[in-house]
Length: 110
Image (cartoon, rainbow, N blue to C red; front, side, top):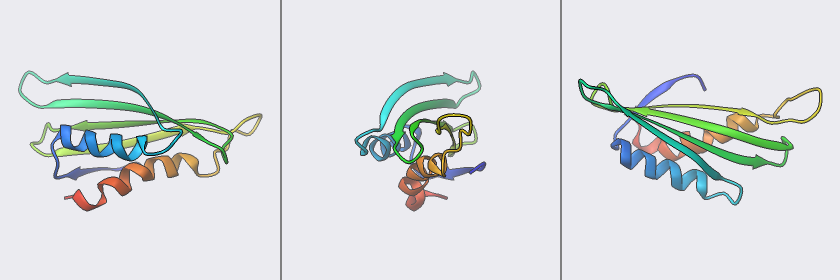
């Protein structure tokens, strides 16, 4: 899903929702968190997760970028990886990984 969308929780609240959703899986792993502030106000938070998908035969990464530069929390997800051998097709696992975040935030979208 190549779209960004707005949600009602703050950056911290959104991060908590996402973390619980991704870490609820046995194979979900938190990798990194990066935050940067803008001198004029607002922050950007980048979260990176990893998860093993058996059907893809590999680990996938999920990067969630959130900011509140407009006064509302904006979310964008990107996932990739998967597959083994010559054809690194992930059988839809990267979309499924992103879907974990989208599903967790569906009731708080603006």
